[in-house]
Length: 297
Image 1: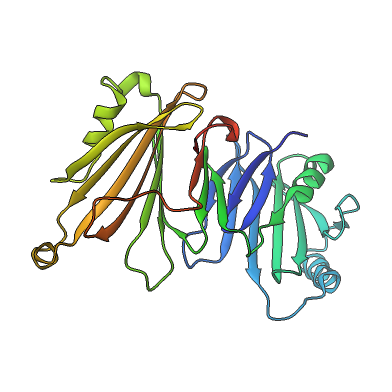
Image 2: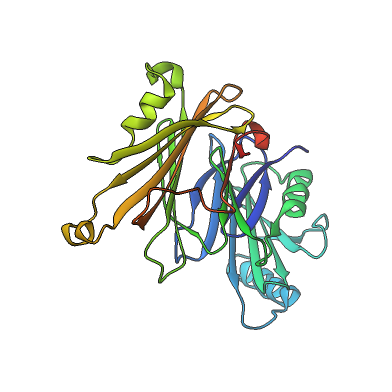
């Protein structure tokens, strides 16, 4: 079964392509993702760090006993097709079937709990494939993967997703550096249907995306496999005092058009600086056309 892959806050989840991400946890919230098709919610994934190793079989036994005691007509079935070390149970409700499964990822001490919701009978093949696909990302990787809503981003280590906005045809994420660091915000955008709104050269559109009163230091075409990109370095004033000290907001913007997806990708990075030289941070990567394009050269 070919699955779409979503990576969110260190967890990777494979799911059918028509199950789209409908809810994702924000910063400082417990880990959670929810996926829905055009009819209803289909998949819910939740994860959190444990202080001690749980007895999953015991937890499922108590859950099964509680459900059957609550309603004598409810029959809770074991989930024989759960790939080890997953364990799970399935029960019938007036609305359909619900499957609950759980697994401990010992290296990170994460308990991952998965809920499938079916209007008809459970699809054992889909359940097994989704559970088999779920994995955690090592804490030692130089960049964390964020794959969702058509965006595929590797953010430098220590950066976390602070805000995520989804408008019609425009997905925008903002990443912030570790707490205590005042500088280094990264934004990434993916814009759809450029044929409908992009009526000028991409370099001119990118110039129009700069902050108000920003001054362009330089603008160039840069290598960005396989499409090529436009890039602008700009400065803008922060406060009168910092301006007197020669400190300004230095920002680099890069954008390219992916003809395969017919999307515009745009990312920016800003710091405080006295100079006029800036590069995108090491470890930052935004991919397009199924992960084949958008790599910096």
